[in-house]
Image (cartoon, rainbow, N blue to C red):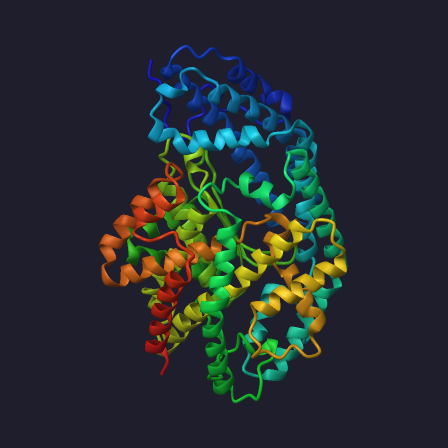
Length: 572
């Protein structure tokens, strides 16, 4: 009998089985927990069956999460999601622990291919160390509470000139050449955000305290150290993050100041205000890459096809199966994501298109994730497909830069194309300090878990001052400044998942630099790295792509010098 199953096949599960309750799926978990494993071949077969079962559960959870985010006004969708989180997932946690013990303690483990399973085994051992029965209900409560952020933000709308706009749609006015319009709408947006400031403070306080309790239960002194292990950060530690923060402050912030000096001069202003940062500095109207989400999708398919034909085909596949929700609308959760579906073997892309350049940047970013998901779909186990963020974001951010070489699909006018590329590159420079600030803030929060809310605001004010330019005048907007951390969804829903964007951005710059010199060879190496999934360490995956996993000042300086040179070639 063949000891393997094809990817996506439910194997020992009936194809028409539905997840109705824990009792409806428990027999399959029991079978795996009790199964006798007599040989290494049986152990590998058991790993495949375990993967098949967990893939089924993961996709069920994925669809419930996706549907809830697509329409936060339908309470039954939230209840359906919460039923899984509170009624099914706690049991899965317990059985996952049993499975980890069964694997790690198996006498046949040493006879498996150690190179193939090394990353999987180290993760299983770490999960065993972290597991505490008393944390299971706390983790379930956390997952439910974390969704309150999206619900709160999705309720916010702006009324301007007798029309109602989502925050994403209202942000289009911040690109208006008329400064009075920009300021008016900026203040309206911030008033809406401030209206949720105190509820969000209360929510975050509850989340911090619950996370601290989970860490203590697991034998840690703080949630920061617990979460590093929980996220599987085997290849770097907190001190490496601190080096990243310092490198950004010393190497990136001077360039940010140069960019803002240039903007101030172009706009002919005496000083920059927060509503002056998104408008075209030459006073030109906002860039619009497409008239509607369907045109945006079709143009992106063409753009991806120009990079490599199969990339466009992959995006077309998602569209054909209805695995896209692109438009911004009232009642839809904020943000954007690519959600892997381990049974369907294609992902779902969720975003909030609002008719601006950000739509293009978001779709090529999430499209990069989608390509990555599809390229790992042939891997045998779910463990190989569940990617660390540092690797996943390398794929998405690299596609932003690589696809930029073909953005003439969106902008036939050479001047508009140049403006779009400038915006992308300046955005890279400016986002790195924000990433450092958000990450540094979280280190402070979780190393000081019993802090008061006033202390939290003071800490953010101090940290954000370190990573923001003094070229921007915040007079009269101080309240918005100290609450600005609340814009970042990750702080509420995905603690400590954010610095990965900065790490991956560095890798993406290096990869794009190689692509400009040798496109085909760079893409070959890029794909080789993507196909590894999570079967190698993060530094090994980066090396396969031909780049370094490095946060040193010297490395960042080299990459930023390249970006600055590219920007100078675009400035006229």
